[in-house]
Length: 285
Image (tube, rainbow, N blue to C red; front, side):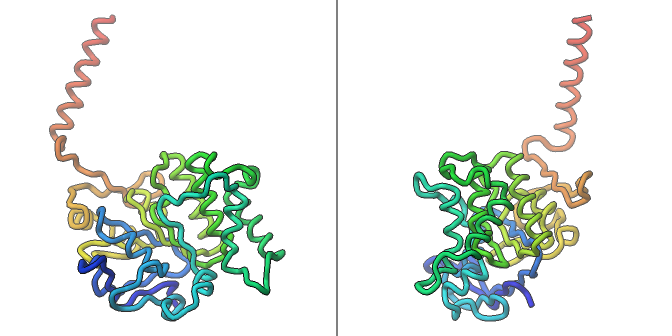
């Protein structure tokens, strides 16, 4: 059984359809990454999978059952979503934020329990935030804040986690830090991870399953080795490129062609710079 499925799903804002008649499956226990140009509907699709956006037509299935027919708290026990750029109330500590992840498990009859405490401690340890538990979220670095929000979703204890552009506004080292964390969660706990990424090379490096969203539907989906090619980039991003192999991870690597400096032009520029450097050396000598 797939973790999530859509059947003839149509999503819209007003009269404008963003996604139309989409049949899609999200493999259980894998990392799925949505890619596509700005405004193509990646985030809209992700939000609909979390039941934050009501479909115009069609259905979304969670563990084989229509998600629309399930109670909200039941859905929250199975699926967590981290939206893009979440903001915590001023002064809220990391520990307080992470505890919010246990809300779906609370009721009038069942208040805070040993299981709740265990899940919070485990989430802090998994995200390496135990030492920062009493720090205010708004005092943390960008990477630390993102880890705090991920810790909250982990404390929720769901098998499936949806993340909308989790590396946005982070520098390169923090992007790798967050993606490594999500990869480790998938490998050690078999969590189903679904996320939106803009960086095609990072998408290919971390994803087991890529979904390229284009023209209100899916242009291609599958293993990065099978679907990432020049034709996909040309159609989905309107950009010419060369697809080669990442020399370290042996995953597809996209090298985009610049419209202002193509092939021979770039080579000629490089040669001119080399000539200037040789002249400087000669003068110095």
